[in-house]
Image: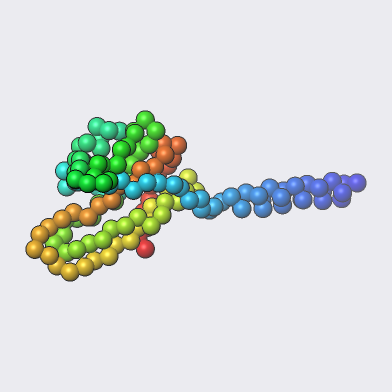
Length: 147
């Protein structure tokens, strides 16, 4: 009888360990939208930044509307969303900075991005991107990974 009870306990503990180990390190994709038609107005911002309010966003970025279809800046509703930005230092080289994916893993958001460096130019620009994320992920810490 004690042997039977011990087997049940061992089976239960094994099941709990297997269940918990399956959820540890689980990577879950997080949807986001890439924001367009903004420009950096404060070049001294951190390289990766989570922005949760309109006033904070306006401190770092300005509107860059252009003529034609899709010329308006992407709307951001900070009551339902927040943004994550990746900003590189100013450069006179052509630099492509592209988000690859955003994943949730172990209580963190992991932002993966790609950098492609091109030829030297006659002017300086500051490569950056802004992604818009659902506010339900706002409490997560953001880490980054260059691919």
